[in-house]
Image (cartoon, rainbow, N blue to C red):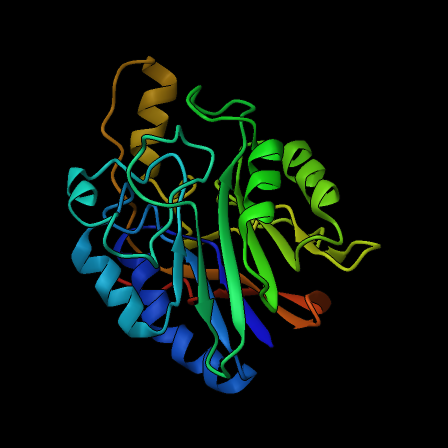
Length: 264
């Protein structure tokens, strides 16, 4: 099977890039299954039901998330009912939503998608991601591939989880930092790995946010409302070929609109 993982979708510019490029990539690359991190898809923070439905209609099969998944309160109205929207599995057990799902590819194969958060420099509510992954893997039914989104701040924690899961899952990719890394590789036991998929959103920005607002925050240390930047955008992700539960080949995807392109 061929899987496409899409890095953090940020606001309307990110959604525009998904709308423009996802159908083309699915067709040209023969993509069987699509996972996108969508926790910043609604105005740069959180996810709404309308946007979740729109991303599903565009061809996203599963949406992962992270520490911003509950920024829009309306998520509480539907996260328990939409099994294709995940929150990190290592939230406390009473947290609404689910941390993994088993779904079918376009060719009928079974794929498990797991969303887990790191703890280093992240909010304090998360349980140990290593033990959380052990528990999930013990619970999963037999599947053709397991895909893991590690939403974490540090490359060291993401890399450690990649090595910890090597040979037990097909693919481990990082999200959250909004900067694509160039360390894609297949680990010795067949697990594909990339520290961070990068950001699908406006690139004339500070990781998707208006530069003037971020500079104001750094220069004054006062509270500032962060709004999504406008202008040209980029599409970041990873394509992986998976066979018998192991990654055989992977390739980073990085597409940028021309400097004069884009709008809101």
